[in-house]
Structure formats: C-alpha cells, structure tokens
Image 1 (spheres, rainbow, N blue to C red):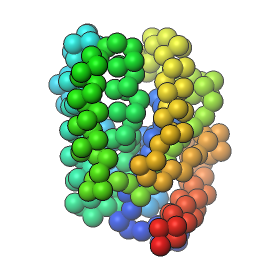
Image 2 (cartoon, rainbow, N blue to C red):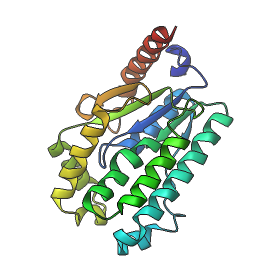
Image 3 (cartoon, rainbow, N blue to C red):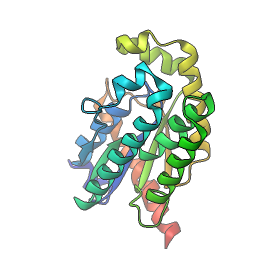
Image 4 (tube, one colour):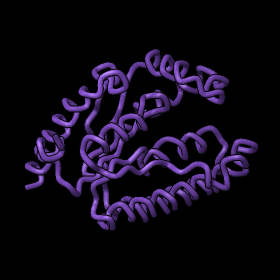
Amino acid sequence: MNLRNKYDIPSNAVITVAGTVGVGKSTMTKALADALGFRTSFEKVDTNPYLDRFYADFERWSFHLQIYFLAERFKEQKKIFEYGGGFIQDRSIYEDTGIFARMHYEKGTMAPVDYETYTNLFDAMVMTPYFPHPNLLIYLEGSLDDIISRIHERGRPMEQQTPISYWEEMHGRYEKWINNFNACPVLRLNINEYDIMQDESSIEPIIAKISNFIRQTELLKS
C-alpha cells in the first residue's frame, strides 16, 4: 500500500532530514522516499572542488567551501520546487550557516569579514519570503553515546580517526542550533524509537507522525 495515500501526505510535500553525523539521515531519507513514492535529494560531495583543499588548510578555504555549499544547496532547493515537490532531502541548507560556518568563525578558521559576508549572503538568498522552505524538517536526535556507537559500527576510516571531542562538539552545536531554529516546522525523532534497518515496518509510525504534524501545521496557518 502507498503510505502517502494512506496517511494523506501531500504529493508536493518537501521534507528535509537533519541531524549530526551518525544519526542515520541517509537511511531515513531513503526509507521515507521509498514508503511515500517521493524522489530523494542527497548531498553531492564527489564533485566538490574545495573539499580536499579545505581539509589541507581550513583557514585558507573555509569561506570558499561554505560559499560553494550555499550555491549548490540553493540551486538544489530551487530544482526541488520547480519539479513540483515530492522530495525527501538529506541535510538542509540551514545547517551550513547555523553550525559549520559559525563553528569556523568561532574557532578562528574563518575571518570575521568573510563570516559577515557569508551570513549576509545567506540571509539575502534564504531568509526571505521568496525562498521555498520545506514543509517540514525532521530532526534526528540521540544521546552522544548512542551516536558515537553508531559511528563506530559503520566503520568509515575518516570517522574512526576523528577525536571523540569533535563528535561531542558537533552534538552540542546541533542541539543548540535546533533549539533556536524557526525557518520551517520541526518534527524531532529520537533514534532509539525506531529501527528501520532491522524492521522496515517501523517507518509507518513515523509517517503517521509526519501526517499529523503537517495537518496540525496547516491548521495553524489557516
């Protein structure tokens, strides 16, 4: 059965999945898209011309990297809405400015003038009534211990070499960011409340929550 029809999810809905590394954004994105018959939008890293340079010299390339991400995500967001919606999106345009650009600025790896230029550009492009914001942002959350355990389980070499202190900082920054986020409605899901890797049917209660949340949001608007 098509769960989109069963739970009356609008066919033109755009849902973004957000959360720190290791919470299962890509898995959730694919599971929701499969269950709803939606397209997916994943971050493209293979074609990014700045990533290698950035990892070699944060201070030199952090501004360039963030501008590149902003441009690419902006184009992707426009494309999604030009298609007429019906998308599940892995990661949001909002995380770049609220977490990563801010982190570089606060740590001194992005100059104050570059950070001001970046945030001014972000506000002019994204934080306007003309920018097509998602219908819903799903924030996947969990304890730091649970997230570190998942990172170790999936065993990506670069992540295994990353100090625990980095994951701790990112976890804190994400929590601070989502607690102050108001660009679109937010549905928070704890990663311990479902297991779509082991039990595909556990996606249905999540879709029921999404349906109720979207319905309530629309009622508040009317």
